[in-house]
Amino acid sequence: VGSAGVAEAEPGDIITYTIWYNNTGDGNAKNVWVNDTLPAGTNFSSASPAPSSVAGNTVTWQFNTVLKGTVNSISLSATVVDMNATDGTVLINRADLDYMDQLRRPMTPSSAWANVTVRRPQITVVKVADVNDVQAGGTIIYTIWYNNTGSRNAAHVWINDTLPSGVTFVSSIPAPGSVSGLPLGWHFTAVDPGPHSI
Image (cartoon, rainbow, N blue to C red; front, top):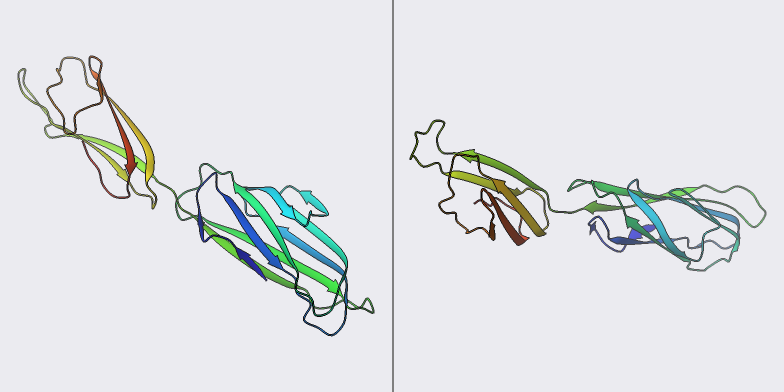
């Protein structure tokens, strides 16, 4: 049986999985082999007990004997390293178990899954003008949309807008944090999911 300590994670988070290999039978199990395939986009961090081998995202344990009537578990940690994983991506972790009975006869193998969903901010920017043509002395109102289409707050969002030559900055809502000629800059913190605009 497998489980994950969290249902959701962001890139950079550590996910701790628990793999249970309980012997509920009336005899000792021999040559118990547990193989865990970590999801793509994660890296092995640590495990207890230490694995017999780690090859890429495949982590393996081999136990000579698992005593009857015992409850046993493996704690396995992996880091989400795919910084391009999109919001809603499902990270699928699969554990496979194979073993023999105490007379070393092959028994029915089993598998278990533990899924974690990637949750993260997803910011897109769109700029539109209120007119297609303007005469000298006229006013152009630009709207800059910085929509968070993800499911988590964005901790920091920087927007730099460079106005075209031949225009003069008049005002904006909210006011820019910096004005350096035609380039304007804003810095927003904790941008929650949904539409936002300047």
